[in-house]
Length: 283
Image (tube, rainbow, N blue to C red):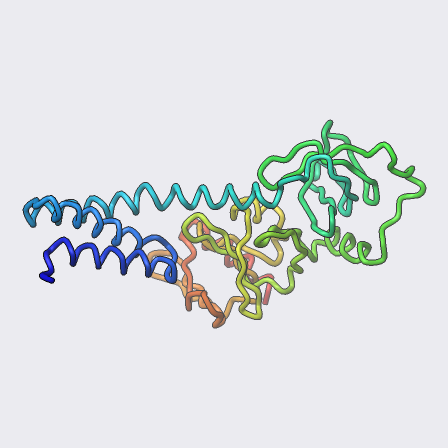
């Protein structure tokens, strides 16, 4: 069998699309898409220069259109799957629901969820609630009719430490993967954003995805321990190794070695003064 040019394009497309399974990110997949278009062009005997144009066009279509579309679809699908069937479910408040204080968390079937009340009422801990709606990862709840009176509201022995830790700013309720969980601030090295995805890194070097933006996370962090160094990083004082002033007024902050993190990050000239004041309080 004599191999023609389109055969080579097609084999390359197959290999790159196969590699996409093992190397997610759709960069390799976009190359495969470009090769596939070029194979079609070669099959209908278009000139080589036109096949190359088809390859480039396919690659850019994959990068600029398909990749963001697939990421958005996967994110929405994951949220829909996890939240499916929650409306009408009964749960218990483990953090006071208070719109003014931007607090609220309920426990349903062993999972913890951010929550707001249906009529902006304050619902105290221990009260039984019912889910009436869901938006993204935030539940809207109302007091369940069979909820005990305030005088009888108590937390279980397992819930008391969690509630107290949150009130004392020692813990955060974060969505990591498919579940809500308590992450204690003393264990957090930093949060960082990459390709519109937020990650949390612990001082032990463990990394997980957080389904919240850095802006949302920053609102709930204690400023004495964490600093928004730049658009990409919120760092804790325990992660900082040293700081060096740059000629342009910026600061270079050296970080303690942890997997998935750079050796250093930059603090802009506008934030450098505030960072110095914050860092001096840590020493």
